[in-house]
Image (cartoon, rainbow, N blue to C red):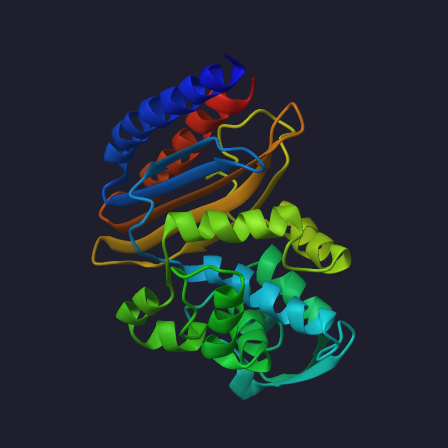
Amino acid sequence: MARAVLLMSLLFLQSVLPPIFAELAKSSGGRVGVCVAIIGARDRAELNASESFPMQSVYKLPIAMAILDQVDHTLLALDQKIAIGASDMAPAGVHSPLRDQHPQGGIDASIRELIRAALLESDGTASDVLLRLGGGGPRVTAYLRGLGIRDMTVAASEAAMSRDETVQYRNDSTPAAAVALLTSLSTGRTLSPESRQIVLDDMIASTPGAKRLKGLLPAGTIVAHKTGTDATRNGLTRATNDIGLIALPDGRQMAIAVFIKDSTADEAAREGTIAKIARAAWDRWSTR
């Protein structure tokens, strides 16, 4: 009897939420992909979850995790200093507080400092230095494949994306793959406890995207997330994203990925779409 009730509950959520997501997606001005899953349960709801979307800065999460995997295997060290010169700085137009503060380079930053800058501030210089240090896109993608994640690819740097706006489509993910990565992080399947905590702490403290996943959630809700955003060119924004782990009132965690691609709507509409979708998922799962 209990199994039948659980199955009926799962079917209800899976049938009710996708139409809600689809209705909310209409305000986005583009194509929306959503995947939501409760960690450790079968509860799940999706919209276009197997479709590929450009990640933009969401890809800094797998880069950081791949670097920390190398730290866990003693191939790198958190306190290891990396020399950063003028040629390492992200090009103009790429968000990078590091470049803004040190345009001529000539600084040494530890791997821990670079991870914090990439995840907490979405710093493009820090991300590109980490990507190079970690062996480039093929090495990070191989790390993902080792986790069983097939539909997420890291291929190009921030610098390369800045030179050609279509290059960002090479750094792609499905919403389902993003939730799989979040699940591996939440369950501790991929990193040591120390490395996992580093990622979660930086994602919780992350400053961009206050009006996205967190935008309509109750005050004080803990959200460990990573945003991704393309610049708007000729009225088109190719990527507006947010993925994260949201703590529910009963102690469970909800993994959620919302991607919006090729949108003609303004930033408020795009961010509002993400916030409303996150709130709809919250309302369904915030109580058992």
